[in-house]
Length: 197
Image (tube, rainbow, N blue to C red; front, side):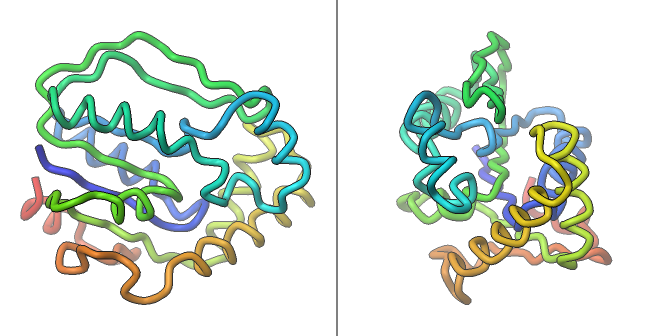
């Protein structure tokens, strides 16, 4: 099975790109790290007291994500989709079977971190580079609409998340740098995908 990781700061277009790839290549599935945040009382408390909680790896339910990832990778099927509710801090599990999966896309702010935990698995990393102000516009619009934030809070949270993302990833911070592609506005994504999928 082909593994494709899509990384970039919040609002860079990871979801849009992964949806475009799936539209063109029907035998794939997307695992979004945004749907694997921790739930319950701990998440509710920490999100109030830890600055930038949802941008830090302590918020990510790595165990649950790895369970789903390993199952899909081993069996070539998926039996459910997960959706995280940011206001209630809960995960909804929806039964949905997908068979004959030949490539798996992992997208989200934790995808690059997760790729670094893999042992001897061949994978490709697409890292999106875009302008900070463009990302902020998208994130503010999304956070007001989907996450119940006001404009000022959404802007402040974005600026913090931008710094956290780039502090985490120094140059050469991935093991598998030979299969890394930088995606910018003028990048020919079809040409890259032709070599990958």
